[in-house]
Length: 305
Image (cartoon, rainbow, N blue to C red; front, side, top):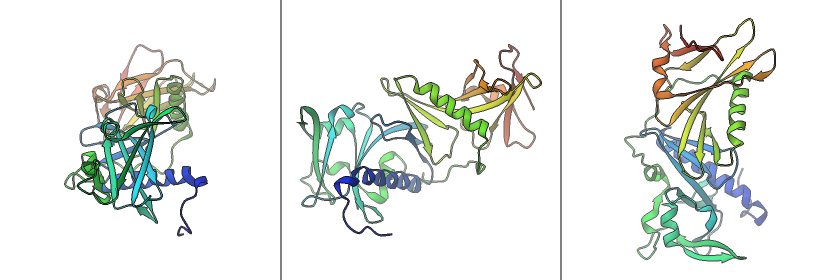
């Protein structure tokens, strides 16, 4: 389906979403999965966390798409209070029919504030900028414009590094219990006003949830596991896919226990640094899985099977 005309003022939100998803798809495709995108569960200024798997770094991204040019220029206006992290990347570009414009603006928020024009709108501070799609020597943003087909390079992934990560394919479905555990962890973390939560797009790696602390800007990844227990079966087995497991100081495993008879989660949970996880369990005979047994409230920890 082709566009029948330019985006209208009533479609600004939709055009912004189109730009974002084309941007995430471009990063995933160009890096061959070495850049893994996490999207927020609530809009709190950062549009995505991009996890660079080559060095485990999380990169905060604010995306600003435009659907029209004004005399050959893109006009960019950003609320000053949304630019809270000078190291976060601001990424801006043009939506074209079926794709993105020939170049993309990529620069740290701190640099953007230094180059853009400060102003205000109805008393609220803003930063305004103008740039062209084809770089010129006169443009103050020239150093931060990159060809769209080389976008991943601005995120630290060169052509030789853009190789598919070796991960085990995930099953096409998840158990209801596993989904319930993920929702419960997200709900509890969301109760803190200091945290912003992100889900992966697509789901390719160890972390199933990324958590950004809004004050320190520190990011942690969480893999979530849920076991079911009852009086007859007080012990459950936590299983991890060994082939897709990537221990990191920035990644933790969280485990919950669902009490089948009471239809609620146990008050106790596990939070284990992934760097310590292999020492707590041993591989299965097939070599594709690791596991350990967990008896909630028991002080006896059992490594198993």
